Length: 560
Image (cartoon, rainbow, N blue to C red):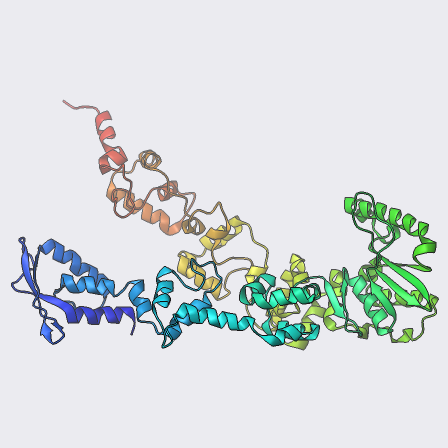
């Protein structure tokens, strides 16, 4: 039963009837409550004025719209009804299971009490006891304590923790701590936290090698090279340290890979940029210049430690992947590996990589048609359904994002999602909406947006998106309302003769919204300036004063 129905039934049961006719009376009238309480009639007789009874009656009529009410509430029962709506009564009527469920649901969400929705909820659980004399708070503590006594967690391996996280799907480490802090503490103690953070709570590119080690890469070029080494089953390490460091840095510099090949150490450095692979415009960039200077310094330091740190050193240019694509980059890697006399390099091909990775590698030069083919292959109607890495990369390119959203909408016969488009200028929105009178109210505009009838980029609530837009009326082409004194000046300048003339002229200009019409200024004046209740001006006294009629009369010549 909903609260409204419950209130009506309560009213019908406990309303008091007048002893004599009371409507229109000026003196206090007597009422008698005939409600039955525990088999006996209440019989409560009370007095109250007609005006007070009308106020009480109207309160119930607003609360119980659509019901035919007769009579007023007995004060005793009215207080009882109010009391029945308190939090104490609400929690008192809940079952013990419901109280426990509510407490566990809101646990750890910044509530006043650790195990309660609020103070009244906590006290009610503290009051209730079971057959053993334990309160609901004691039962919650026992339940949470039992979660900490899971002996199998002590024997968990890294694979067990991976399975645990795949099942739980925590959004981040904070959510893990809030929902199951004990397992997080054990994971720290067992030394698996760093590895699990890389796999489940970090954004860098990672993959699992054939030895089940997790390789973390800083770029797509590193990912491609690491997968090639893994496919050839070579003995390699990612990000080994060099025996030197740069000035003002407290940590040693790192290479990208080290390979053990026939007892020799091969160090691999993947350079992001090289002068001859950059355009003139790119060379003028400060970041590029800083990187090239750092690369030159690092190459000198690598040469100085040639005998002690490595036997063979290899340079790999990562820019080839971006400029020429995956196949050209793999050809370059094959040449390098062939110079090291590594066999079975024929197995190196684009087939080593997934469709998502191939798209990510060539995202800078990606064609929308390739993304559409990927969406059709996987039946993805929205690019937000793509792989997370691919969707994030698309979002970083607004132009590609807009083109893709329109193409997907056309391909799957749906309405484009305008929230992915660039925000249009406010003048364009006002020009479009003001020219269509069917959109001249908030509900019609919102419905048109929901049905996809508005142009690309039009948002559901422009008032919230544009600070210069103060109200919805501005969208229809109407100006902002002005103060009383400004409104009075406008009315005087247009020589408005009175209320009737003002209302007629204002309604006419509002209908056509012609900005060239002199009366367009009347839209800056409130529609009913003399009515304080319906939003008029507080300073308004009379229409003669507002329109300046008395001034015109005083200036007219006296006739004898």
